[in-house]
Length: 232
Image (cartoon, rainbow, N blue to C red; front, top):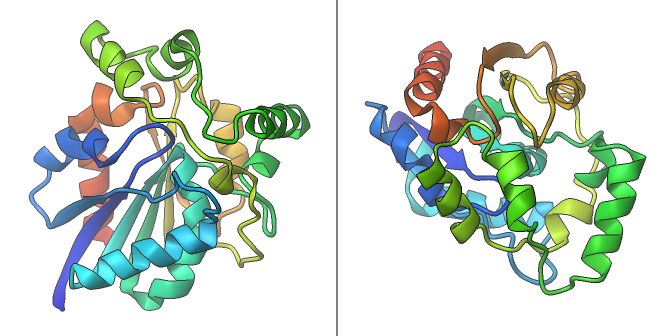
């Protein structure tokens, strides 16, 4: 295994590893963007974390900085449990961090939890927002071309990563939370609730919407590079 630290990017809902390409092109350190295997029946955060840890092992990666966007935040406890001290830093990008023992929907309040639970019940083959909702929540600072690509490429998500509890965990160490101040999907107020579940996190800010990796890749890459430089 390599002793060099690798930045491992995990995408959020509806997107894929492709969404990180612009940020990766701005970085001069080892990087890899992985596909989060959450779009299958019976998936859980624990099972997903296990599969991703196995992928990291297969790639021969020893030391990692994990960058998790949005939905991928639910994977942090499972990944830390499996990778241990190999995780040098956790970077949460407008990520959802469930309360200990809770699930993604538990992090969003009663109304959102109720609505999502009902929607998944009636959409067992996967849930995809309408083009209008995608445009409003994810594309508020994207150019027209990127907006159309987001709508076209958005992939339906299964219930597992949303509704299954992540299990109990201690506050995650060595964490940075990057707040996106124009986010219409996970609001700045919601982001404050998420980062409060971390142990003395470093807090960074970007004046972008939810898809900062598309609207401000250079600025985001700069913050991530600073996090890499902070790792031992």
